[in-house]
Length: 165
Image (cartoon, rainbow, N blue to C red; front, top):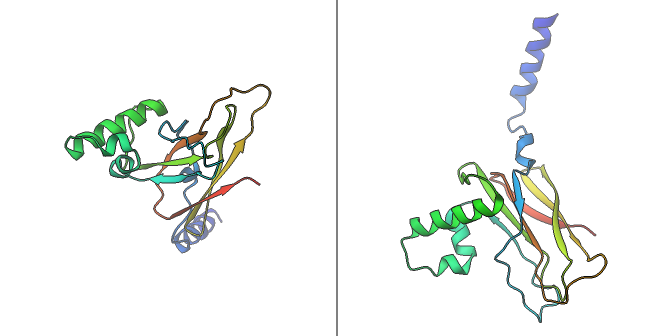
């Protein structure tokens, strides 16, 4: 009976051409996105979501790197090293990993924070679920731009963002 069961299981695996990799929804590291710009006139309408799949995309997304007068390979290496340090990881392997950025938009006080609450893959689409948390108690009276970045295994399909209601 055992050989028949193993054969049946191997046939089931062979029939599914694209099994969903459970690791693709695993957050490797997270941190704040230090490159969000506060716009005092936006009233939170300047929310931004990015998917960075390469060092070149990271450089293009951050003006301080994009405007550097150096060879592109050197700028990409420096940008990747800075981001890895912020994420508290040794390195970012762009062949196997990507970075997802979620910002909650400019806010007129401190205490707000963004949290990526989950990643879900279905039908070749990754959904990034996230939530903007409001301040609790006393908050600083300064404009802020709450955001979070997560380092995740690379996903080649479409990525959509779903804020909590």
